[in-house]
Each structure stands twice: as structure tokens, then as C-alpha cells.
Amino acid sequence: MVDGDDSSVTSFFPATLVPIARHPLVGGLRPDLYEQVLVQHLYRYLDFTAKLEYLVVNRAALGIAHGSVDLDLPEEMRLDALKIYCDEAYHTLMSVDLLQQIVARTGIEPQLPEEPYFLHRLATLRESVDAPLRPLLDLLFVIVSETLISGNLSAIPREDDLLPAVRDTIRDHATDEGRHHTYFAIFLRHLWGQLDERTRRWAALRVPQLIHIFLAPDTPSIRAELRGYGLSRDESEQVLAEVFGGDTVRQYTRSSAQQTVRHFAALGIMDDPEIREAFEREGFDTDLAATEVRAV
Ligand SMILES: [Fe+2]
Ligand SMILES: [Fe+2]
Image (cartoon, rainbow, N blue to C red; front, side, top):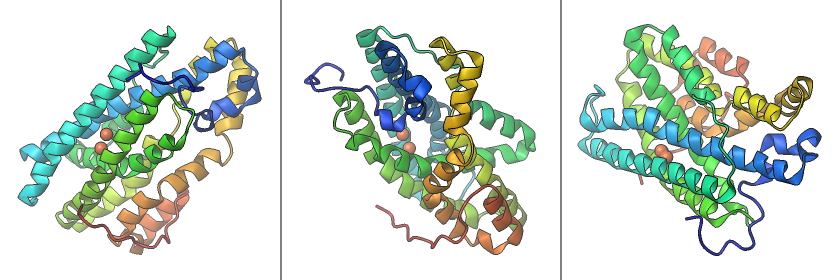
């Protein structure tokens, strides 16, 4: 909760994890506007989390638990999916609740897009594939996101000067997501074993794009935010180009996705030159050693 002993708090979100905060045009903003940069990042992060959980992950979790995901799975995996469904609903609640508490405490109104960028891009990709393949695309995105998110969360709780409510919420989430990561790595193997060769290839070729969709910065939302601080159009574009341009996002994506790529590589997909080439073209390592996944 926001109330509590947080007298030593210096930030609502670690500035080191807010890419635009490092740019001189943002670092030079008035102190109250600079604080808004961190708060808006926190809002965007919480909104991303809430919508990922209840609009994407929980649809898959419910489908697995309820049996509408048409796969042959051990009964305990259906029950575990129900537990994940409850976890994700709780993560949504904590995210929405924390967001509202920060608004009440700071008086800073969220500048959030109607639809986070990842949802917009996922919907666009979904529209582009044949309808019968869309449920598989949804499952792949959930596998990708559930094996990426645990790494994303683990860096944040180490920050000492963070508002305790933020740190505790993220730390608790990270603990749950560690279990979900293991579950979906195992789920991937069950799924893969029940796809025919042609569908496996189709699925493997979608994975690089799904990783990019999950990890890409929400540049439309950040652009609007920067204009809101009084930066000109040219200045906003300069910040975006210098913070997210060049190889920066690609390097971040490559390192963040290593574990996810390992899970797919362990299925043997990199033996197919076309699939290997697709991963490499999109900036991913394809020679990662497979890691063992054990049930917890
Ligand atoms: Fe979650
Ligand atoms: Fe999860």
C-alpha cells in the first residue's frame, strides 16, 4: 500500500529503468515535470501489466483450465492454469489499485493511451493471419510474454530508494511470474508435441515478431507525453531517436529474450535454416545452449 514508512523515498520508479529520463532534454526539465516523467512511466507500466494479464494471459489461462484450449494435457496442468488465472487477476487488481493510489497521492493524472502499443500491434498481427490460426498465435504470445516478463520484473525490486508500495508490488509479482515462467516453458513442450510439422514451422516463424511486440517501447504514447511537457515536435523526435534509435532497442531485446529463445531452440527449431535465419534477421542469438526446465 502507498501509506507506510516511505520517508526515504526518492522515486516512484527507478530513473535508471526509464529510458527517456537519461536524455538531456528530459533531464533538464523542471523538477516537478521530471518527477512526472517517472510517475507516467510507472502508470504506463501498471497499465501494461493490468491489460496484459486480464486481456491476454488470463484468456489463455482460462482456456487451458476450462479445457477449451484443445490440447491433451495432464490434469494437474489444468489445475495449475486455474491457479495462474487467479494470480493474474490479483496482479491486475494490484496494478490498478496502486495506480489509483499514486494518482491520489501525487495529483498527477495518467496520460495513458486507450490501447497500449503491444495490444495494438498484437491485434494488427492477429488480423493478418488466417482465422483458424489465431488461437495458436494467442497461445504463442502468452508463452512468449510469460517467459519474458519474469526477467523484466526481477531488476526492479533491487532499487533501494523506490516507493515501498511499488517495490513490494513488483517483487510479489516477480515471485509469481517465476512459477508461471516454468509452467509455460513446460506448456510449450506439450503444445509443440501436438502440432504437425507444417504448423510448427508457421508457429516458429511468428516468434521473433511476438517477442518484439512484447518488448518494444510504447513510442506513440511516449511521444505524446513528451509533447505534454512542452517539448517541440522536433525535440520530441530527437529524444525518441536518440533514446530508442540505432541498435539500442535491438540489443535490449536480444538480451532480454535469451531465455525465451532458448525454450524455442530446445524444441529443435533452429535446425531449420529458414527459421534460424528469421531469428537472426530479427536480431536474436540462435546458438544459445538449451537450459533444462523442471517443474516446481
Ligand atoms: Fe502476472
Ligand atoms: Fe504470469
